[in-house]
Figure 1 (cartoon, rainbow, N blue to C red):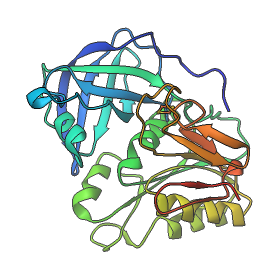
Figure 2 (figure 1 turned 90 degrees about the vertical axis):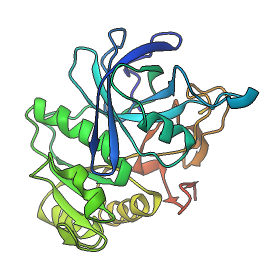
Figure 3 (figure 1 turned 90 degrees about the horizontal axis):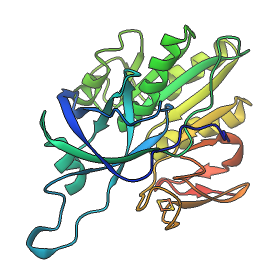
Figure 4 (figure 1 turned 30 degrees about the horizontal axis):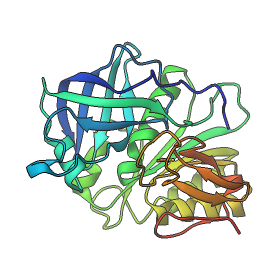
Length: 275
Ligand code: FES
């Protein structure tokens, strides 16, 4: 695991939203965060809104939501991809330009550095909302001139609208309404058959387990950006602890990116198997 990750400035800071837009069925929130260090793809921030964040009629505010960034302009402009599936993410999705967002980050360990002189070609694989860290990594590789595969899987055409800005991606959908019908495994298998690869993946647990098993079977090095409910985001609560071959790790500080070599399996609930 990397020990050179960008470290978050101390404390929570409030930033302005400068733009919002939809990407497929997801919502993109762009903020200007001048206090931020450079972020590494796969790192995350804890996000909450400055006003209207739970606590109605005397209730408690919600916990922040751990959200991976989608892109950065290197000058403090950073985009987050939000899927409004619960009260917190729904509230984040409702934000408009000019609203205030509270954030802590960047947190966790992102993907390891990838160099143009690496012996294996990077193969990036994403499913659903796992798109964000993978597209952030793709953006970084493009800037560095590193050729790579980009394989994106979605449920259907509505979700696959999120792939519109990446015309060179190999897209598959469960119902075949866009691209190849099926999961990411068929295009990934073809990529692995065509030459030496290192896989970088993020997505729902069933997809991650299928990718992990294929990489294990083919002795392909792989890195996985894991998702887990996070309460504090900085290692204090152990709410994100999972057991790996190397022992118990906290995904918020030891991950969320883990090497496939420490994972024996990923259950359908996202739990990591150590045996
Ligand atoms: S979220 Fe609290 S220890 Fe990871």
